[in-house]
Image 1 (cartoon, rainbow, N blue to C red):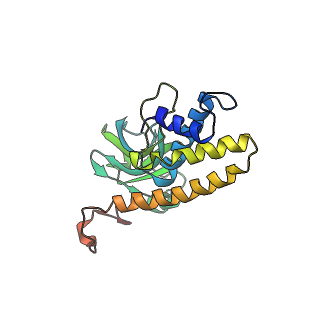
Image 2: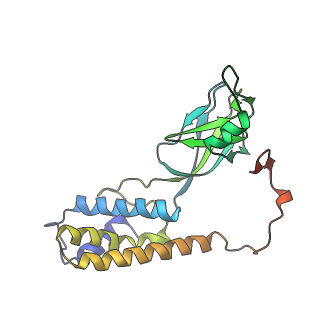
Image 3: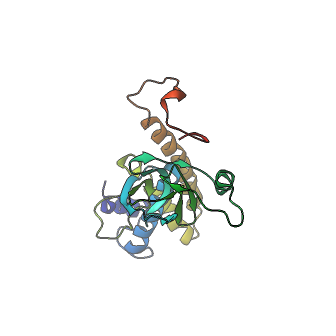
Length: 216
């Protein structure tokens, strides 16, 4: 479905086929907000970014501007293990006058809009982000959604909820309930889709890459 088709469906259900109380711009804004909710809760807008190159001696690097959730991070094609700042303190154990470890990174941590690597890299290599991206903002000129087709038909309920809320109409509660139920369905659908065409088997830990503090 296209954004224009979804908008037409929303207007038909709200009995306002042309802009009056609710403008087209307002409805497209609600549609985009719905997409952002689906992306963050279902984690279905998967993408990668390989535009970051590390600099020798530099620990932290900015996440991609559209990054909502990091699912995987690799340095020079090697997967890094995520750690906390407490893990970092425990591993380096530096005191006053101490030095931070350098070399090929094995770990990363998140802090605000940045990721930090440990050990501190000593060479220029590609830092690849595998992440959930924020959907592209929708406008009247938009021709596609960012979220998968599997979930696009859930968007009208969120929009109608916001529209009726603006009108102080009790029907807002009905569409909010439908939206919440649909998000639950979407999460379940996405989890099932990740395991299709696979056999459910116990994984052997010996086949995984291991660091000093466990499996990557």
